[in-house]
Amino acid sequence: MALFEAKSSALVTLQDLRPSSPFFKQGKSLRIIGTLQEYSLETGLATVIDGSDILRVSIEQLKDLKFQVGSVYQFIGELLIQSDNKAILQARVGRNVDGIDLNLYHQSLLLLRQFQANHLNNSAT
Image (cartoon, rainbow, N blue to C red; front, top):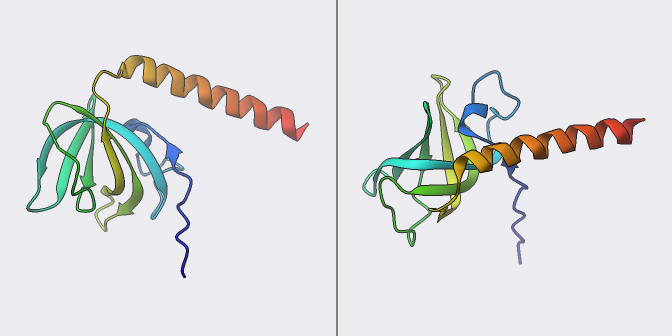
């Protein structure tokens, strides 16, 4: 019996997904949140936005998820970088997170990163 080992997914914002970012790597397991701008069940692709940042998400594996344009979704999956340096998140998990305060979410992510950086610095000394 083969066991599937799910990778730990890095918590990132769409702003973090620029080619210069350490998160912008082929196959990198990520967890993102964005507002659903559009989707197509025929093509299996969705577009999520966060401010001016946009990410395409492959939703082919999310057969049971109900999509609604304008709602906020969280997706977990692996980043696929195309030859034109554009990224698509190959989602393996998705859920509607309407009601989340995105500003508070972004603030908490910044605090988490500060804590992790301080913890790493303190562990090294």
